[in-house]
Image (cartoon, rainbow, N blue to C red; front, side, top):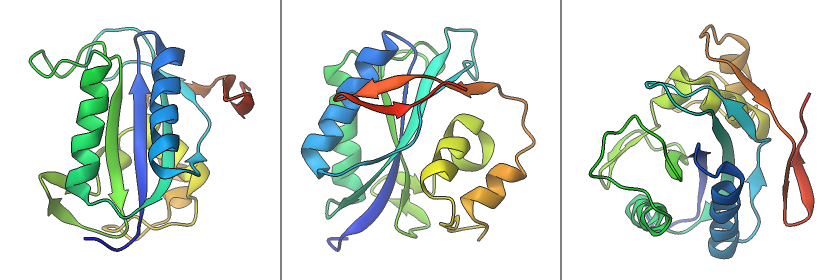
Amino acid sequence: MSARARVYISIGSNTNRSHYVTVALDALSEWFGVLTISPVYESEAVGFDGSPFYNLVVGVDTDWSVGELSRRFKQLEADNGRRRDEPRFRAQTLDLDILTYNGVVGETDGVELPRGEILRNAFVLWPLSDIAPDDRHPVCGKTYRELWRSYSGDQKLWPIDFTWQGKRISRAL
């Protein structure tokens, strides 16, 4: 997969949240240039009793393969204190996940696409619908706007004030 691809990436942190979201955005900007950035949301921890997360979705255009993206994201996470030898559902300094890679469906370079969290978790679906409302989920065919409007989960999240590189990218309601 060497052709240019549109990729959506989720970013999450519940430890020193502003710092680690900024670290992720800085790295993505350095690697890919122009970023499409959703608002930043604060959300309850899912799957464990922990501090609230900051979550957002970023869109990039790249010629990197899924495997290269995955390797770089894991290295960035590790460089920022992420430990893979501990339980999955726990506090996270930084978590980056590939949500979609063009319209690819299935396992590619060890990554399942599209990521299942899109349909399950509000903290992924709402920000994705903010920046790609008319894009279609490659399996169910519905737009992210349609999926968000019909979302029936009970996870609570809310937009927050967030500034990156001197620009306000998110505003609290």
